[in-house]
Amino acid sequence: MKGAARLLLPIVLYAAAVPGLLGGEALSFQQALQQADARGEILELRRVAIRRAELSLAEARTRLGPELSFQASGAYLASPPEGVTVRAGELGTIPPPISYAIPEQDLTFIEDARNSYFEFSLQLSQPVFTWGRLDAAVQLAEEGLDVSRVELDQERRRMYLDLHTAYYTGVLARESAAVLGEILDILEQIEEDRMKAFELGAANESSVLEIRAQIAGMHSRIVRAREAHVSAREAVALFTRSHAGQTELSTAFREELPDLDEAMLKSRAAERSPSLQKARLEQQQARANLKRIRGAALLRPEVALNLSFEVSGQALPWSEEDWEETWDLDLIVGVGTRGTLFDSGRSPKQTKGAEQAVNAAGLAVDLMIRQIHLQMRRAVETLRGSEAELHEARAALAQAEEERKNAGRAFEQQLLSREQWGAARIELLRKRLMLLEKQYAFERALYELETLAGSL
Image: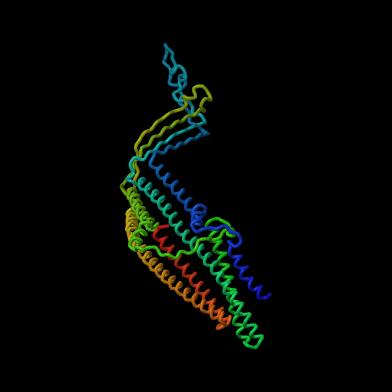
């Protein structure tokens, strides 16, 4: 019963780690990519940034058009100005024999002001000439929108690479758990043989403790593999917004190396690199910013057309007869200009700083191209090295398989003990573990090269 319980332990652990054994839905890596692209919050945040950049561009373009504003006010005058009235006879009289008062009756030239006062005005302003400052602001907003779109591509590449790592880490952990379980079964068989030999006095206790230490170490590796598989499934679920316990990672490792034209790969990587595209856009932004700063420099006044319509009065409209006689209308059309004559040297320093930014952006583009070429060289180096190690692991596995066959025949002929036969099988399983690790390394190197080349 003790041996049976130990035999069931790795099976239970492996079944808990592998959703496919429990009826999980198969999820290929391509399906995971599609789900992550459609559902992932990481990319959705970048899409929100794009929409914000689109609104900023629309706002910048509105500054090229006219602006209409209004102002309205109502006031109460505690001491309104008095009017101008000449009373009858106030200017004297004509002496007799004709007596005539001057004026003959009260004359009101300006009526007393009322306590109430109302004013409403409309102002229309249209930029006419700004030395290219507003156009440069629009260009900056356009480049900002393009940068947001490139950052979405950058984030998508990073997410795909992280998803690839999580997905195939899960595949590696799952396959490794199965192989480790087989090794554990053989170790437990060896433990039984050593226990019998110890009980018969043919072996010492040290050999039993040694195999038990190996079994404990194998249990530890199985637990780590199981936990790594669960964590990988959780990571895949995070990217795809799916349930981790309902999916089985179904895409196996690739093992074939495609044709590698390094010169073509370098050219494609530079052409499709989001980082290089962003660097070039930042260079264009630096140029547009320089144009904007120069447009606002000293002795470069802006010209604008201004149209103002004003209405003011004292009586509330339609509150009394002849209310409109208390109101005045006015229309003002003019052309205005505004500029800076002296700013303590701020404008020249801003211009020089912007020029330095343009130069630095150009250097960054050139450096980025060389870095991409170097990254591709290293990616090719890593991939070819991984391919060579993969071939080496296959050869070692083939050798171990042949040795296992030979050991099996020798065991059947009773030329080898069961422990020696088990050691040959364990060695074969260890080679399988090594091959799995090399397959994982090759898959990662191949995907990183594809990511760098933009061929996803």
